[in-house]
Length: 46
Image (spheres, rainbow, N blue to C red):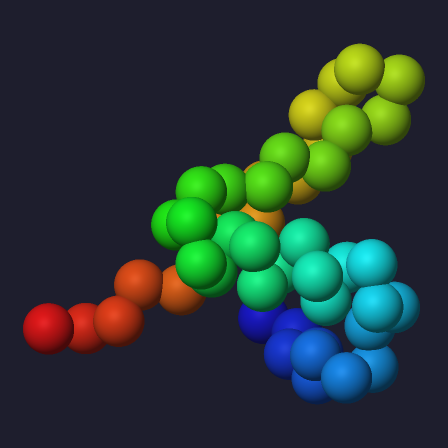
C-alpha cells in the first residue's frame, strides 16, 4: 500500500479527509457518476 503525507495533498482534500475522520463516514470518489474509490477513516484498535 502506498502512504501519502496529508500535507502533500491539496487543501480541499485535507478538509474532506478531516470531515471523514470527524464524522466517521466514508468518502466515495466518482467520475461521471461511477464510483472509482472509497476513502474511509482509519479505525483505532481497541
